[in-house]
Structure formats: C-alpha cells, structure tokens
Length: 298
Image (cartoon, rainbow, N blue to C red; front, side, top):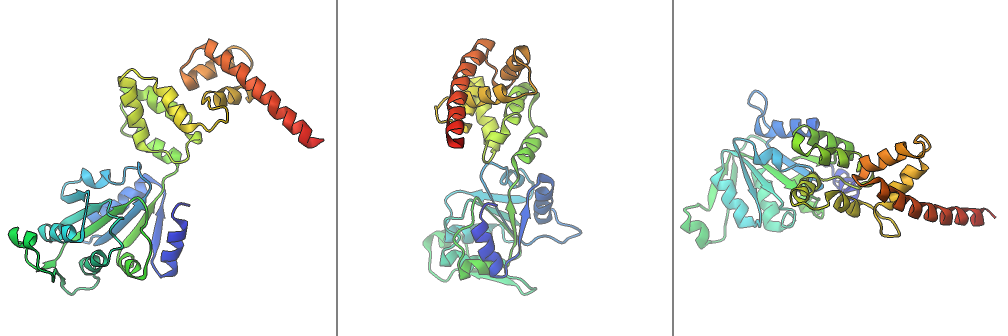
C-alpha cells in the first residue's frame, strides 16, 4: 500500500483515512462534494493518490466547481477562498506548501467544523489584496477540496487540518485503471488499448497518460509498441522484447510453430522473423539460467 507510513501516522493521530480502489467508489466520494444529497455536502475533502489516475479530471470538468492548480501560496489560497467564498473550490497540486504554518492556519479556519461562521482573516498588510479590493476579513461559506499526489510530511499542525477533512487515498490497481480507460477510449485507437491491456502485469503503476502518449507516438508514425515495452521491461540484456519471447517460449499451452508465432504478433505487432530472432536469444539465456540452476543444485 502506497503512503503506508503517512497513513499509519495519520491514523495514530486519530485521523480517519478511507482507502479507495475503484472508480465508482471514487466518483461517489467526489459527487458528495460537488453535488451532495438533499442539500448536504462534504464540506472539506482531501484526496491523495498517485499521478495519472484521473483524480483532477473529476473536478476540472464539473459545472459549479472552481478548479485551481499551479504555483499556490498562502495569499493565493486566501484570494481564491474569498473569490469563491460561497462556492465549491478545488485546489490541486499544493502538497509542497500544505505543511507551511500560514497555509495550515488558513485551512483550519476554512474547514472549521460546527455551525459558527468561518471568519477568515489576513492580518498582514498586503498591497496586492488591497488593489484587488479583497478585504482582510471575510466569512467563508463554501466547500474546499485538496488534491495531492502524495501526503506532505505529517506534523501535529497538518494532522489538525486532515482531521477536519474527509481524507481519501485513491489507489486503483492496474486492471481497474484499464477498465476505466475502456469506458471512454476511442475505437480508432483500440489497438493501443488492447496492447496495453495485454501487458499491464509488467507495469508497477499504470497511468492513463501512458495510453495518451502511446497514441501521440502512433500518430507521429513512431514505433509505439517498442516505446511502451522499453518503458516497462527490466531485462538484464537491455532488450525489452526478450521477456515476451521467453514468456511465449515457456508457455506449454502454446504449441510450437503457428500458435507461438501468433501470440508473438498479437503481443508485439512484429513479424514472425522477429519472433525467431528473439526466440534464439531467449533460448540462449534460458540455457545459461538452467546451467546456473543445475550448478546451484549440485
């Protein structure tokens, strides 16, 4: 489980963290924030999960959510909170500043629990705020969502912010990411989708951007299959095709000849001749491996 140390630290500080692994469950949690149920909303939502899983998309494309990403600062958050003080505000990629005292202080007020007015103040004089007509004090009646790729260092101060939030760790496994991509993927590039789907067991953490980048390379006439395999494989010889040849060679359910050739073409998009070239290389490597096993057994 990613972020395990931080999750344990948060839980040891009494912060409840929900571990979500499917897109339907994740979408339901997001919907509680921007849509709610009979007038009841998640007032403060924190989402943490690896890059490339589509966390931000849920908020970028949703009507009524003010999405803000980029180089944030405490005063920038104060400004955005004022501008959307009665609305839903989503702040993305702000983990670098989330542990700063001024930022945690803001969020403690913005996400305060209870029925009392959430009065936010900026005590220092600031010409930028004054020039924009932003007061040094206002009542915040909106909702806040924070999206991060990883938890910042968990301190007593930041844990107090997390404790005010509904905290979600989104960590979909590779098959779930692939299934989700299939719900919107274009038939024009079904070959990319199927190719990645056949090899997702070789990926540590599948990213939606991987599909998009493969399509870009395909449209530019590049060998997108070779590019994908070069990213995934960790073969000592440095040839990313060897692992596939080795896998087919050892698959006892595939008979020699056409069945193994067809499996190679389906997995790599390369010719039969290329299969036999890599088959011979794989056979030599297997011979070395078997020799090592025999020596070890002696």
